[in-house]
Amino acid sequence: MAKRDYYSVLGVAPDSQPDEIKKAYRALSKKYHPDANPDNKAEADRKMKELIEAYNVINDTQKRKEYDAQPQFKVRKSSKGTHRTRGGGETKKSKVQASTEPQSLEEKSPVLRWLKGLFAKKGGVDEQRVDPKQADVHFTLGVSMSDASSFIDQALREFKLALKFDPGHREALYNMGLMQYRMGEFKDARATFIRYSELVPNDPAAKLLIEMLQD
Image (cartoon, rainbow, N blue to C red; front, side):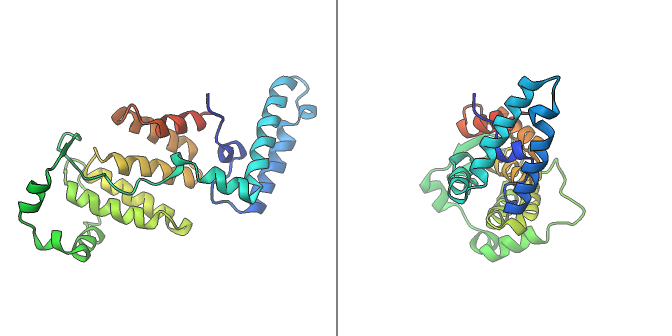
């Protein structure tokens, strides 16, 4: 079984500053110290060992960098050339078919595609409406925002919009879980990865994250 995610152990978001991490560690150390739990020293000792291990990694700049660079924490940046169907499945398009299909002005212009996503009706998207093209517009916007910690909440919103337009957009669902994780919403993130695993049962990264984010 995978070890619990170090950030969730410390109860801090992955973009937390060193002083926030130290503050969280000190508070949890007092809470779980064996001397403060005389009736349950075995469990307190286990918690303290887990806490110390997490802190020793996250408080070290190089170790933290290596931890954050693990494959399961990488944003999915494309749908790998697949085309989603109404039922959420995917079918491959041949290169010949893709090259001979007529293109609309919107398809030719990335700017127009971006604007269409930007000015999608403010009242929300009809969840019954399936529009893979519009979903990809929001997905691309979410990916472009996901690298900056100050835009994580907006990236999360874009991935949610992508899923409203196309509930079968697997990469948007995975990335939604990552944004929830980066915001420190660990329970929500785990629920999202479980939902993702129902669509993609054999994805090792999602399975690992589900294990790492358990209580």
